[in-house]
Image (tube, rainbow, N blue to C red; front, side):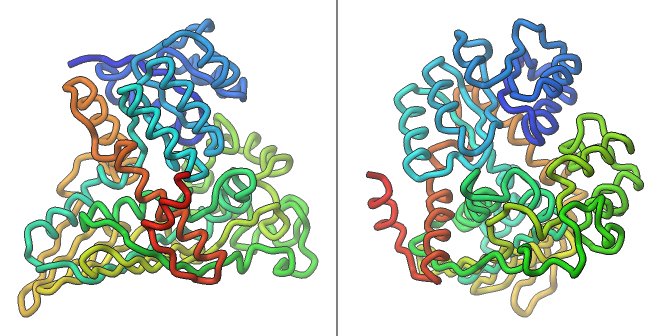
Length: 427
C-alpha cells in the first residue's frame, strides 16, 4: 500500500479539520508535506500538528504553487472563487487534485478546470462526498435491485438547519454571492449530483423559486443591537451567537463540543477565545444586520430522463441539519432519513424492510462516513490507475443544474433546458 504525500491549500473547516485529519486515522496512506493559508495562526497550528517543516509552510496558495511540485496530491480547500486559478496552476505543476466543491463559481471556470485536467492527464476528484456514504449507497443498491420497480418520482429535502444557516450563510464565508457563490451552488451541487447518481439519469430541465425572506434588517426585533454581545435578546433569540456556540445541545461549548463549528471561530476553542470571537469577529454579528444576500429557502423542480421527476427543497428553517429522500417507484417506495440513519423499503402490498445504516458502516463521522471513504477510494484509484465516481468529468453536469436553477430563480421560475443552457454557457 502506497503512502501518498499531500499538500493542502486552504486550512479552514474542510482543509484543516476534515481532510488533514485523515492522516491521523490513516497515517500509512497519507502524509502532509506542505501547507498554505493566509492565516498565520492556522499555518502554525497545522505545522505543529502534522510536523510540516517551516520551509514547506506558505502564506498563500499562490506562493506554494510557485514552487515545483511538492507532493503527489494537492488538496484545494480555498475559497470557491479561487478554485479555478489554483486548480489550473496545480495541473500545470503535475498534481493530482482533490478539489472541494463547488468546482468553481461560473460555468466557464468549471469547464476550464475539466478541460485542463483532461489535457494534463491528471486526476481531479471533486468532493461530492454523499456518493461515498453508506446511507446513499444503500438507497442506490435498493433502486438497482428492482424491488421498487422503475423510479418515477423523487422528493428530496436538505434541512439546512437554522443554526447552520446563521453560521455559514448569514454570518459566514458563503453569505454573499458577490463574495463567493449562490447558496444553491455551494450547498446543493452535491445534492444534484447524488440525485442524478441514484437514478443514473441526466437532468433535462429545471425550474426554481426561492428568496432571502427572513435574514434582513426589516425583520430585526425591536431594540436589537448589531452585535449579540450588545443585544438584550442575546439569550432569547434562537439565532444568538451565544445560544448557538455556547448553549446549543448539539454543538455548544457548554455541552462539550470543541470541534466544528466552534473551531471556525477560533483554533483552540475555549470560553475566553470564543467570547472574544463573538465580541469582535463576524460570527458575533446579529443575523439581521449582516451583509448577506443568499437565499434562505429555495425549491427546484427537475425533469430527468425517462419522464422521471424530482422535487428538491433547501430550507434554513429546520431544527436539525439532515437530508431526507423519498423515491417512489412503479412497484414500491423508499423512505430514507439521514437523521435517523434508516432506509425503509416498502414494496406495494408487501412488508417493509428497514435498513439501519449504523449497523452497515463502522464510520459515520464526517458526512456519514463519506469524507474518509472518498479519500480512501481516491488514493486507491490513484494507486491502481482507476478513477473515482466523483471525478471532474462527472461533476460538471450537477454543477450546471445548480447554475441553471439559480438562473431560473432569478427569472421567477422560468423553465431552463439543460442542453441549451450548457451550449450557451460553454462558449
